Every structure is written in structure tokens, then in C-alpha cells.
Length: 272
Ligand code: ADP
Image 1 (cartoon, protein in one colour):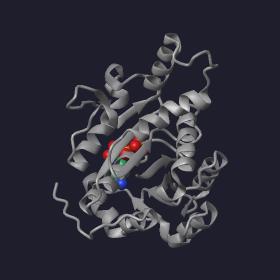
Image 2: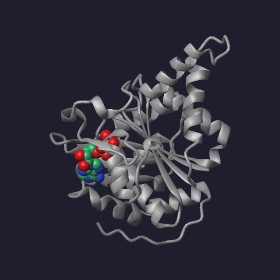
Image 3: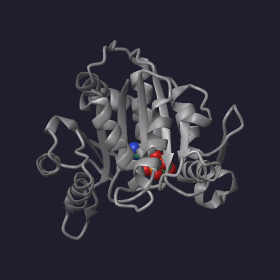
């Protein structure tokens, strides 16, 4: 099984969900059996009780699970019905652990974040069917809530083999109007945060308001420890439904297939 893990840096709401769903769609069009997992590090069990002003629509899956709007993105982009197993929250994980502890399932062990919580997370990820699993980790690298999920995925990467993993880091490059320049420092620092917990991304997706110049992209590649051809710039699109075509035109699917040793057909039809 292969995994593409999408993390976010610098700030939230930069389009990780849209990009993950777009990559998933392109890979599906190329003949790969794709499944998705959105990890929400919040402590709610699901989005059903959350204020829609903060979290957008509550998206109800066909098996009755109340997820947040990202699962809606995945369903619409991928053309595949989402289910309970496509979303994981910290609330679900901790509830399971505490219920198990009360049942005595840990047989007297001291229940800990590592290994008990991480094993629970890894077990759930492993049970997701599919040839390629797109995992999107909600929030931003450096958030306390997200740490345990990143640790679990780092362990999974060690256990399943690095050849089966591709880490995509989505960042934001701001433009300073007064000095007329793009700023890559926040991106560099967010990659450093990832590395500090043992994860080196192989691909960096740079979101920005306007197209970022070649010089800046080269700098991001150099300081991020990523090949230049694995750094992609995604300036704001007029329509988010254009993003899958942009992903395809950049050849992101080919880079992913090569890295993960996946056989793909060059084919993409996207008519929304
Ligand atoms: P995240 O998953 O990082 O929180 P989302 O994917 O939910 O971000 O996107 C946040 C917002 O940004 C959404 O309203 C979405 O429509 C918009 N957005 C995402 N990607 C793009 C893009 N490439 N161009 C323009 N708008 C985008």
C-alpha cells in the first residue's frame, strides 16, 4: 500500500484540502485505486456539534457520519461516496483509548501517548482499503494537537518502508507590497518544524496570491531539502475546480507515481 501524506505550514486555510482532493482525483483518473483520510486533530468526536460559522457545512456521509466540509470536497472532487472511515479526529482516538482502559483491555499496562495512542492511530490508518491512501493532516505543523498524529505517521513510515511514502508540505509565500518581494522564510521555518519531528517532505506546494518567481522557488527547494522539480507553485485560482487540471498540467501525478513506483496511465478527464 502507498501513502501520500499532506501537511500544512505557515497558516491554516491555505488549501491543503483542495490540493489533496485534486491530487486524489488526478491519480484516480490515471487508473490508481485511491482512498482518502482526513485527520482532524480537534477533540470533538465529529463535526456534528460544531458551529457552522466556524467550520462551514456539516457534511453528512452516506453512512450517517457528520463530518466537516473537507469530506464534501473529497466526495465532490473524487466522485466517490465518503464514509465514516475517511475521517479521524483526536476525540475518536482518545475516546476509544479511555473506553479500552476502563474495560481493562490494556491488561494492567500504563496507558501512554506512545505506544497506545499511536498504535490506535496506525491501526486505523492500516485498515483503510485502497492502493493509494491520501492522508491530509488538518491544522498546521507545530500545533500541539497535531503532534501525536505526525508521530504516528512517522512511525508508520518507518514500519511500512520509506519507498511507500511521499510527504507533501503545503505552505504559503506572502508578498510584501512595500518592498515588492515574496517572502520564503515562513516556508523554510515550517519545513524545519517538520524535520525536527523526523519528517522530511519530498514535495512542497507553495500557495500564494500571485505567481512566485523562479528565484524564490529555487530558494525553497534548497532550504527545504527538496529537488527543485518537486516544488510547485499554486497561485490563487479563480475557481477551485480548476486545481485538478493545474495539478495534471504540472505533472504532479507523474512525480508521485515515479516516487512511489506506481504504474499509471496518462489520462485525465475532468468536467465539472
Ligand atoms: P485547508 O485544508 O488548508 O484548511 P482548504 O482546502 O479548506 O484549506 O481551502 C481553504 C479555502 O481556500 C477554501 O475556501 C478554498 O475554496 C480556498 N482555496 C483553496 N485552494 C485554493 C486555490 N488554489 N485557489 C484559490 N482558492 C483556494
